[in-house]
Amino acid sequence: MFCPNCKRPMTPLFVSFVCDFCDGLADDSTYDRGFVVWRNRPTPAEEYVFRTRQDAELWRSVRQLSDFSVFEVRSPFPFRWRTSTGTVQDIQMADALVSIWPDHRFPPAPNHAFLVSAAA
Image (cartoon, rainbow, N blue to C red; front, side, top):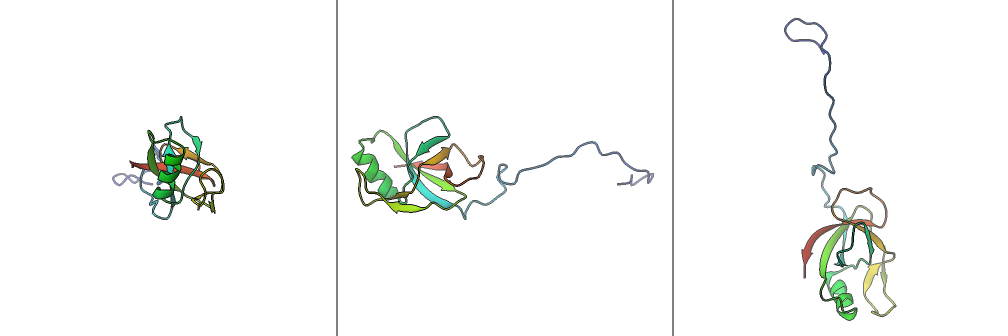
């Protein structure tokens, strides 16, 4: 680059970079979503993720975890859903435990998700 006045070469002083995702410029609308009974563990925390809020609320009720809230989570990778066969049967849940992160700034990988909002 040349000086607009004297036309001599200019010395670059700064270079900056931005992460579109971490700085909030990327769109996460294509992410898969699920629901988690959030037990306020240090993050990242391994948790069960359920396909619907109703499935999470049913599991929370049966497991006597009514003191904890149901949060929406999103993942850049699709969840693989299965039907539960354990203590609480016939609810849709992810086929493996999912690492739950506090926000969208985490290394993308299968079975990683972040908390979106509190409800329930």
